[in-house]
Amino acid sequence: MPSTRDLLQVISTRRKNMALVGLVGSDTPAEDAARLHELNISALAFAEAGLAMQGAARATRTVPSLCLSRVGDRDGALAARYYGADGVCIDATLPLDDWDRLAKGARTMRMLPLALAEGKEGAEAAAKVGARAVLVRGASAEAVIEAVASLPRALTVVAEVLSADADALRRLVGHVDAAIVPPGVHKSAEFPGLVAEVDP
Image (cartoon, rainbow, N blue to C red; front, side, top):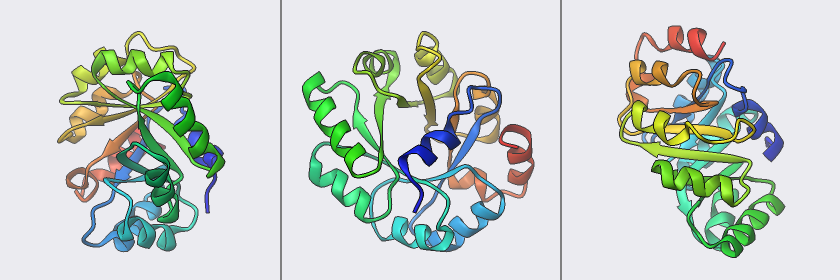
C-alpha cells in the first residue's frame, strides 16, 4: 500500500504541471480505478471511506488514495485508513490543539493530513495550523485561485472545484499542485488528452 510520503510526493508538483486526482464513484470503483491507473493518473479520491475505496485500492495497489470527507475524530481517521486511504481531510478551522491531535493521529496511521479549507479564510487557517498540504474547495476555478493566492509556495495545494469541467481544471494550472477530477470529466473521451497536457 502507498505511504503518506507517496501521496505527498505525487501531488506536490511545485506548480510546473498539475497532478490529477480522479474522483472514483461507488458504482464501478475497481474498474474506474484500473482505467485511471492505465492513464497514469497521479492519485484517486473518494467522497467517503468505504467499500468503493477498498475495491479500488485492491485493483491498483500502487496508486495513493485520498478520502475527501471531513474527519472530525480518531475513529473517522481509523475508518479511512481501514478502507485504504493514504490521506484524510481535517477541518482547517478547528482549534489548533484539535487540529494538531488529529493530524498527528493521521500521521501515526501513515496517512497525510490535509487541511480542508472552503474559501480564502479557510485557506489562511490551513497555513496557520502548519499543515503541509491543503485541500481547497470552491464553487469555481476562480474562487479557488483567489483563495490560494496568498498561501506560502511550500504548502501543497489540492483544488476541488465543485462540478468542474475540463476548462475549469485547465484554469487551475500554475495556481495549485493538484486538482480533483470528477467522473464526468475523467470518463470522457477527451480525458487522456487532458492528462497528457497537464499531468504528463
